[in-house]
Length: 196
Length: 196
Image 1 (cartoon, each protein chain N blue to C red):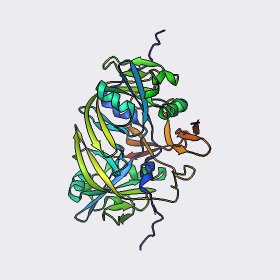
Image 2: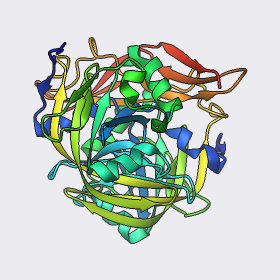
Image 3: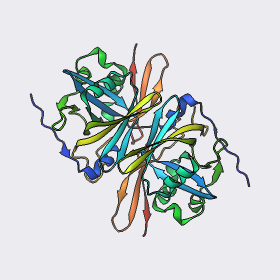
Image 4: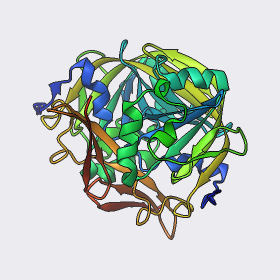
């Protein structure tokens, strides 16, 4: 028996949204006394040994250029309660300020392995050394080797999800004002609005 | 004022768990009348134009070998209600059966662009042509170019999360029996147990 598909075609411009909701990480980097930070949702592990992660970045981002210069970067996880700051980091360019983290009231600390900035308020963070770059169309996959990994007391063998409340990005709406839509895994939704 | 960090070091063997919870996709492939399927949580978009996704796979997987032969594969999203099947797909090898999808009571359909198998019960699916392979330590990043993209009526501009109930993998526990832990974004948790 042939079963009829209830599927419809997805426009190529929207295919990446099929992956939503995705947990953003904040990519952090310091270069010549300037601190850059950008949310990225295209980020995942790539190898257990050596311990590698990949973050896919559009080369026009200021953070991308800073990573190439610094040859290192940080990866930070902010919880659901920091949705507003994550949206703000995404809506401002690193060209506009000396310390993008402090511009959204986040605290910068210096990683002990790479001297790259990490976010004090993060639930977990990685220090990465730039190991490889793979150009893939509009983006470049930045492959980082983990030099240091840190987490709050809410991480043991795994995350304790009764305490750790991860943040997910679910899309952007543009009625009247532009808003980033965030979700938790506890059934809650939050919108962060911007006026341009 | 120096703020004391509440962080602790994360063992290198557990760093990938900082990324949890992650939504698994099911990678599907057909070769010489055999149908393989495996859950993968290391999967993300890599480019808008051309439209590329990357899935990181350990080369010892049967599905990996089949993808190299077929030069194409499918990516499928199963909702939270399919947690049991996703766990089962992860716990059995493709070497053990002719059609791994039917072995867990999922329905195979053939993609119109690549002839690769897709999952009827999926909320969304992609047909991908193998475009590039990037070796990264223990894994290989399989870069696929999207040849077809499909979704249920619950996807419009974005997912309608009042209807679409995505599945997240949160870890594995091994008391008495081995269990995969899955979460929804509605505050629910489900365990799928296996006896070996």
